[in-house]
Length: 590
Image 1 (cartoon, rainbow, N blue to C red):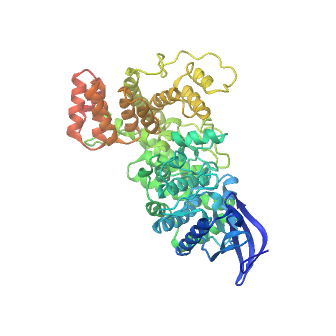
Image 2 (image 1 turned 180 degrees about the vertical axis):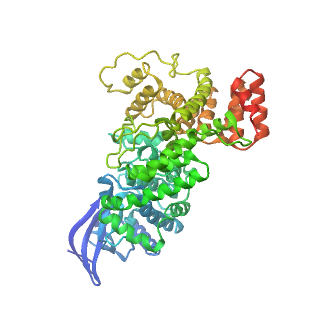
Image 3 (image 1 turned 45 degrees about the vertical axis):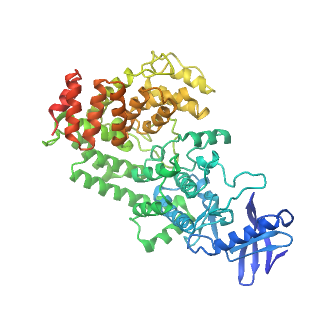
């Protein structure tokens, strides 16, 4: 069979949008994609396709598949001619369990550059996913399926009127009938990065309807919570790309800059060779680079210790030991960092309990450091068996005895969380008369529940940590269930979870007339380091429901922003109202 000057050979791919054939052309092997059967394409559609193909030809970028030729065949209808790529799709890497974060960054940077080039030309891909990215044997990364893209002013639907795209990679606005634009591609790129590292999509659920609901609600396990090798900057980047509000997402060009900064460890002229090794053997690549990455983590940990930052050092050790669990230098650095953290603080204007309070907030806001100080860095999960976000952490091997700062600093952390919990406990739950953060003693548990209501009922009988897991399990089954989301907000604050800020923001929006949720959101934002937003919440609380503990909370947020006069004012008000912790903090302000 021939299409123009091209003789079609075997079919090599395809889907709902068309079929791709290997073909022989005048200059050698090519790939030919037919988009529709000729009899089903009217004159308007043919003209539109021709304009679109011409637009694709005008875009030139090394990570975009070029359109070599296009036309309309009498029998097969419109077709595109592209280079025949030799390699495999990222779907193969994902199916194997994903790649190490550094490999994902090297690949993701190329994809981001391609997407940025499309957007600069006014084109939105709209079907970005691992299947549509090819990593070649030579290390090139190519984004394909540009035939599904659309330009400004165009609308691309299937014959049935369904928007073109793949569930799991469709942004919330695509699912909800909103405007389609460049932020949709940014959202899909964030999903792709997440999936490359973890082997699964952030909102993946057993049924499509559940995944759709999860996307619209916006709840997912953070990347760093699943894989401890992930550095905080990558976690932040992915979170920004998955923002529910399209306007809050960075542009593709901004992602290029951010990703480029995260791969500064690899010289520009060496990146293609690194990607070739990843494409050929991702697991082998990780085994080769693991010692190098562990050594780099050791250097950063040493620098942090020299700078007097033991908890930063522990976080770096955490990442390094996730690559090489028995790395002798890192284990020695852990012992030094623990000892340094346990030592009395050096004299400074920010000494005493207030300084420790500030450190506690930093620990809460940094998930890796929090894990380090609360469990004593007893376990280093293997990447080969990523644990479910619902599982309890389990040691990868025999626990190392530790007389670390975990005991001292964890106690300080508990003090701060206990103080914040008093504020939480004073609020009124609009969904239940039972306080979910102070349940009755747990009876013996029966079989695992099979419904969201069953998990919620189990949470009523559990201590906070176990109740939090049960509520999360309930939300897997019923992601939009508001009573479970309400309780999740309170329990995440109780546990010092940074993701509480996201959860409580959703809950506050769902209960605009219940003032207590604004205060809870403010507490969650303090724990997540979002101090400016927290201040706005505390201002609202104090104007509508004055309580000295909110002055204490606002004073803490002011202090974190370096606004010491304002912090002193709030702490003084709380102190004179009888909040002892505020008196102690006020006395030790700089």
